[in-house]
Amino acid sequence: MLVLPLVILAGGIARALALVRGRPDRWTESLLGRVQHSALGVVGLLTVALTLLVLAYSRRREWAADDRAAAVTGNPLALARALRKIERASTPDLGLLTPLYVHGEDDNALSRLLSTHPPMDERIDRLVERAERDGVPMQIRR
Image (cartoon, rainbow, N blue to C red; front, side, top):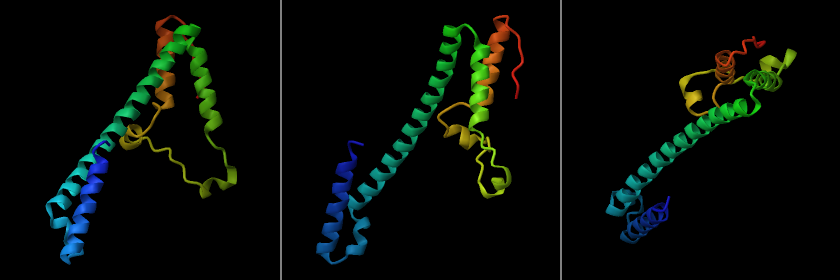
């Protein structure tokens, strides 16, 4: 991001030189134009990579928050029940209007990669497993 202003400046200089030379449509053929094109590609890739890292870190923090909440309360099943209630409350029941809305319930690799939270079912299953491991078996309604 620190290089971006220099890249924009290089592109502006390349355009100005092309305009002065009388060929404003060929500015990308100059050295500065190629530098700008390459640098913008690198900045774009770095931005995508940084975004994916931030999203992965956010999911990791959610797992850690679940673990910490289970440790503090001493009752992972209570947290699992609360997560299930939140999931039910956040799922729209639109009745007759359901065909008019788009539901993004696809759980494919891309949606998982771009999400800030782990899937609710996985979080609940993990908490139930923890409760069983700690000796508190119980079923959660789905």
